[in-house]
Length: 362
Image: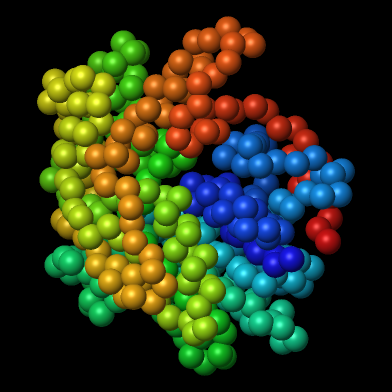
């Protein structure tokens, strides 16, 4: 049985990747930061009691700022594949916390790469680095693996550092290490502070009469939005290749924030222009006007292509928000209708996670 380690397993991509790897028969280990409250909601649907001998999802406390802990975990878990998804991932917040962003998103990558190198003497470990389209920044679209990097935020600069460190560990030490340069990819599991989730959530809540307005920043920003479950499939495929390389994953179609809002609001029969307000607080000090990717290299190398158009993506996200609101209004014991994805609105408390996390790893 293959064994994988995921940093950032509690996030959108980490939870979908855990779903995928479990379906493929992997034993999945995840690193979770200690918190006074449970932050594992996205994993509740795949949780198994720690006393279950057949469980294949195992969580460990750790932090990419703690190098010695990373070495300990890598030596104990002995993974075949490492997926590094953990980051301070909010671009706007990176302007407020540049040092913290650099420490987690940039230096965290170096610490993990060094831990992989130190524990891979007697076996091969394949390493996936979650890079970002933000590293292209001001470079004009379409962007691909040959496009010059022009980062426009502390987050992008930290991601670019991680990109180059991954390439250097591959070239200097022979690690099977790849960079996945992923363009924006969304889902109902997206964090509520990200613009697509904010828009989908607001459309549903305004339709339900719970809110009146949505405040946004730059409506003219163009992004290449895809569906997250398809992108984690691409991550996995990169580590199944014979040789490591770097790949862009993208739909190749750009849409403005304004257009995405239009898709979400029209899905519930509303005119976005009657409800969206501009707030300069959401503007970045340096804007990135347009990110639209060319994933031709990935298509040729391992047959990956994005399948979900942006309008359908918006509908999936709004439907999930509507289902969540309906679930909140239902009486206990009333069946909850299932939408895509099936688990997003079910948020049971999981105190047994504490037992799982406190138990030593294998």
